Image (cartoon, rainbow, N blue to C red; front, side, top):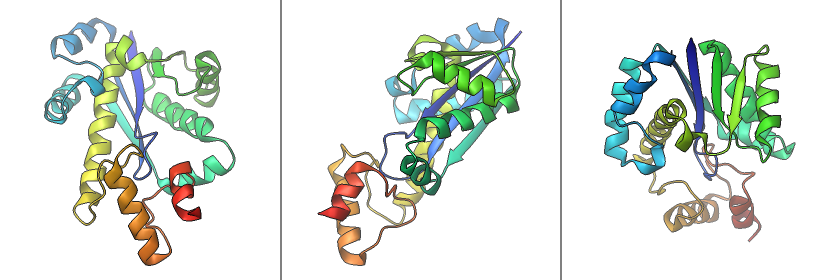
Length: 205
């Protein structure tokens, strides 16, 4: 019996990719994930996440990570289709890993609807969709660690050339970076999500 867990990282960010990650493992080995100390990535330090990333990858049967570019995000937001975009990528991960049951962290207010959409897009795979699945199921916690580390690495790469903070609208360094870049260039780099409300506000101001 193979179980899959799927989660995202970077959904609320003003810049960089939205990362969707999935892992699959035999149900009987789920306890091994817990014994590694796997828990929701938000409750772990960046250093611990990096250590666990390597251990998870070695332990699981398979894993798959997809990155969604700011450009794809922007065109989906214009159509009010961000949840659909995420469902499409989660379905892609579910199809690749092809497990008996897949647990997903729902970004939709209606987790049942979100699960049905992923099932439809993944050729009727069995989906269990929940809010806060990353803190409820160790399989999703493990997927959240892979997603978060991948996302952190992508931001780190950008940071080599730009002083842009964490990428989130709550980070004054990020807001300052986007504001001054736009002021000086009258445009924004490709890694900024132009459809995001805080970014739109900067452009309009």
